[in-house]
Length: 151
Image (cartoon, rainbow, N blue to C red; front, side, top):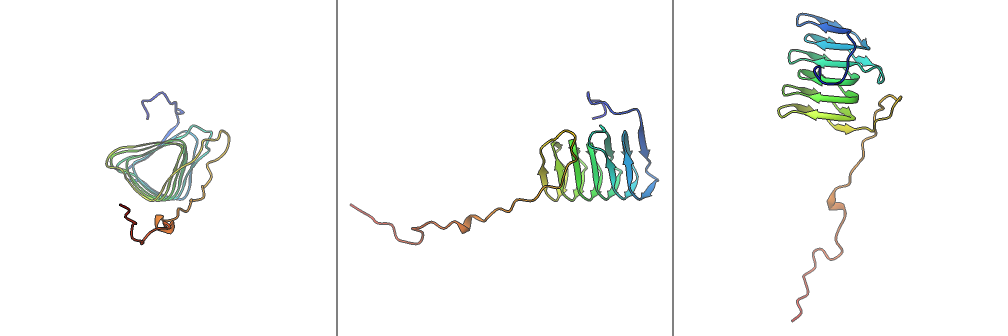
C-alpha cells in the first residue's frame, strides 16, 4: 500500500515495538504500529488516513480509517471506508466492515466480513446483520410420500 498510487500525507506516526499506548488515538495522516495499543484508532473517513499494523503490532480496540493494512493482531471491530488489506500474518478477532478488501492466504478473521456501500462524505455505519432461514424450513409438499409408478 505504501508504494501504491494512493497518497498518504507526509505525517506518519510510528508506535515502536517497545511502546504501549492505553487510550484512543486520532489520526489524519499515516500510523504505523509495531507496538501495542489498548484503545481505539480513529480517523475521519474523508481524511485519506492510512493505518498499518505490522506483524509485531497488537491492537485491542476498534480501528476506523479509510485505508488499513493489518499484518499483526487486532482484537476488535475494523471499519474501512475505502480499502483494507489483510496480510499473511493478520489475525482479526472481530467483525471487518469494508468497501474494498484484499485478503492474502494465511490471514485469519474470527468474526464476520461485512461489505458496506461506499458513500462519499458519510461515515461507515454499522450494518444490520441479515438473518437467513435454514433450508429445512421450506418443506416440499410431497416429501415422505412414495413415488407413483405408472407403467
